[in-house]
Length: 351
Image (cartoon, rainbow, N blue to C red):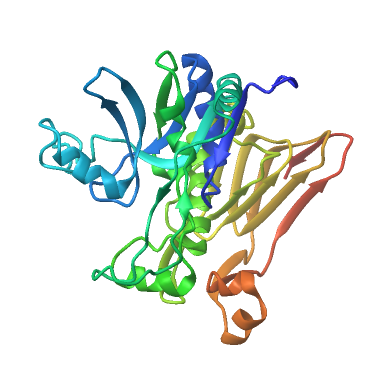
């Protein structure tokens, strides 16, 4: 606080794409002066995701707080307004309660004051994970837990607590399962939520950001089944943070005359200050890197090569490399056009 830090982000799940959304969430927190802001997605009734609720006590106290998914249905059934339990809103098909994805933005000033008042002492609970429906054996060791999303329970009545709901593609693709468990879920038409799906969804998010900036990119690209998990990858779009984190960053690299297109089998990696000011066609793999302080301006470029492909890993490869073992596939870089500029100054590409 003394260093001037105004906001604290609690990143609690293995959910890499959330960082694309955090600038927008921070803007919501600042514009509404939220003490606590929970990042949420539209929630499917019964989904194993907590719901943000406004709880009204009989003595008049009101709290906006997360209710865990295993407590939400019985809580709703105990109220006259939601006696049907955890069911969909007919107007939207989603739960009326936004799905909490365990990413929180706190006002640092409020956070420090509450820590000083409570000395960091918070309520704890036991959340047993049973091996089966008989509930006679535990699947994993049961322990005392406390959750950051319960922090609003410690706040005074004048605190401002809210949420920011975003589309899933922009903020939520967790890695919850190893590859064997993910394959089992996939075979039962359940979300695998594994390393492969998280990587695919990061590529989808990158492709969407380029589309919103004006690029033409197909939705499909590389389809296959890897270690028992069916995955459909878009074109392999990689946007490093030095190129852009949020949509406004990405849009700033597209001039009014930019016309960028990537084919379904294309791959495009952008790093550093790279601007598009003309027609760029990528049918293969293109990597453009501008070092810090340098700039690459592409006025016209056509790339056509063998590009990158996604292939299944062999059993030997999976045994030798944990990164491959957790995915079940590898990216084979057959041919790549590279434009690397270390600077200083500006490099113009006009071919």
